[in-house]
Length: 220
Image 1: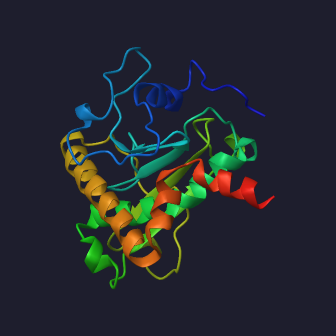
Image 2 (image 1 turned 120 degrees about the vertical axis):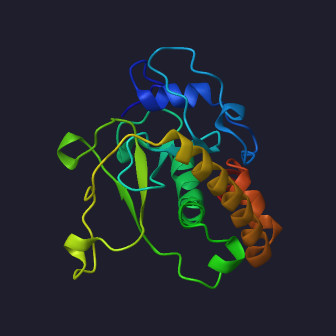
């Protein structure tokens, strides 16, 4: 099991190191990326377009997206594979993947949160790979959220698209600024949607990474 908090050669650890968490998890303001992360302090670090930064997770735009709006959700600590993830990290992933998926799709499509409540969000992949044979490129646990907007001609007659279908290109930084503002705005609205539908307690559990663990302890 990978027990290191960070790995010196890991690009995701570099991003996590430049983007400190807040406790409880505060949503990033829908502003320029330079206001959410420190400038990279080491050559291996890249300034990331951050969507979410919590004590256990980071979410940011992929630097080589398969499609517009491709986002990665990664553990903050260095974990090689999903089998290395702690219970607290697993709980945080479970809480945020659905919320972040909705925000990604709304940001990529331009839909409003209140519209998305009653409207089909569209199609997207959530994919997680473990090990080089399973197509994991960066050995640090991460989930891909890949919007599938519009037709995919070569698989139009099928009901699914295999992960990786699509040409990877460098992230368009001008478009990334627009996307990340839209996605952060959508994420804030998603938290409000949770408050409307599930109540204040659900929001508290979502934003406080330790709350779920404390409740589990009290039930033992």
